Image 1 (cartoon, rainbow, N blue to C red):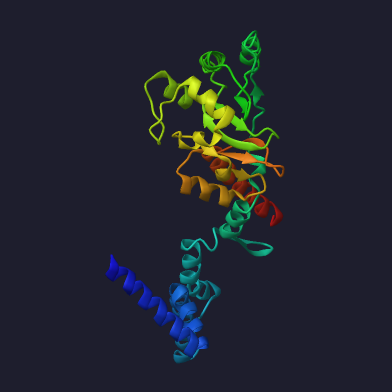
Image 2 (image 1 turned 90 degrees about the horizontal axis):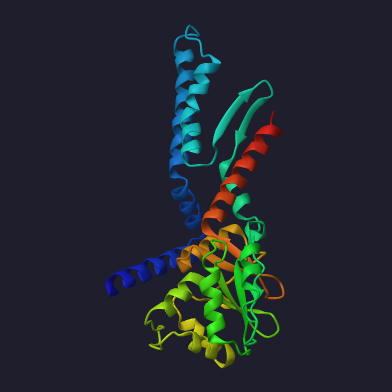
Length: 299
């Protein structure tokens, strides 16, 4: 491992020295290496064109060089551009030659805001009262409520908390437990069924503490940071902003190894969820729309 690191440092230092001593030669060499196959294709095309001209010259004009023969000479360049993704289609029509650039469409789509891919979720609160605290459960089931919100600093009743989760997880729409600060700012989120499974059996968090409804009530009231030790809990600092690009969102999902991440608005309040599959599908559709629009503009 040390040898590889040392080698890597030496290569970097060598590159830096070359760049300092011969800046023009360094960047020219770098440009050539990055486009070597394109240069080879161009050289082949030029050689073929020269060969065709020489053929006509050496035969005293008896050999005719047609447009189709010249077109053959640029085929290697076209093949390279398509294979490398520089272009996706070459269209020859009455108005001339049209090139569709996939890279531009992909980069444009990836640079779009993640805001239009957010699954908007309006979390509902549960009462902190001991009596009548479960009256909202039937209404929440009928409405297909997706998340429950708990406010840090409030005193909740463990039995009522358990009742809400046991009843609402019977609905496929119900998915999340959202924790907010007393000013409404987002603190964190967790999969509701994962949380329920931790309390259904003797479980401990990553700090070795048992997970019970009584313990969860205590954490909400006085120790919310304890939630960060629960497996599957996503704190506010891991959330996405609604203005982030789709590329950045996919990168974050990949880095965090998660299928979804919470999204916050400008006021740091919970806005919803970005799902990996939905984001990927939206990105593909966006690229398709851009290419279709480019095709329509060229017709």
